[in-house]
Length: 276
Image (cartoon, rainbow, N blue to C red; front, side, top):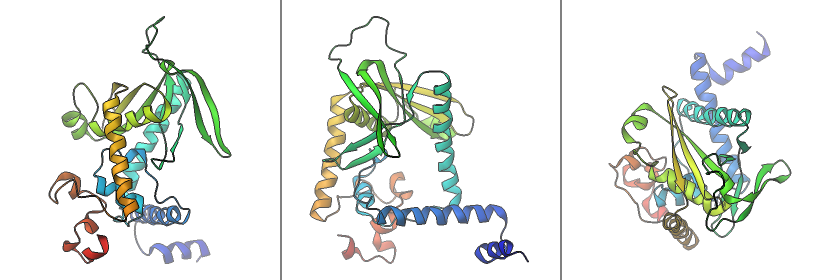
């Protein structure tokens, strides 16, 4: 038997190729989590966490072990990434893309992340003057650091945040006039970090590829809410405590949370005293 075939059989046993793919994806994700902790990336706040339960955010920032994500679910998440890449490549061919992403960092709020696409503001009326408009600089990440991709008026550019969701959420749970609250909160945080004042939350139905988007403008009240939540979590982390739970065990947010097993340790083998 060829050594390569023997190695495959030793690693995966007598399973079909689909199970092999799922197992590989799961193991790769677990290795990446270990690598993330070893590289010191624990303790950072990721903008995609905006609107989540504040205790869940604290678990993530403090490096608590979440439940293992099945390989099938990781493939579904990858499809969302492919949607991002596909749309960014399309925008580039349409000559409306400025940058596929920006590097976002804020030391005080411990923010580390990247935005989605930056595009020209095709919605800006010709010859219009925007009150309070100012000049901004935007940078994209590179292998050596970052590169200036735009310098000019904030009103001439927009951020597009891509979201891939299933048919049920697309048809039943998307609001009629604005995006889901947590997605708008994420975009408002991007406004705060970049100086941009307009953007789109762009949805695709992952089952049918039907698309819709919502126009979002700068809202100081939402930004204040987001920053307050981040500061609240950081205060608990620095004190070595966990924020109170925002939801109950039977709530949707808890039933599918990666940290459910350690958040309600009376239902499993975790010692509750170790988590307070």
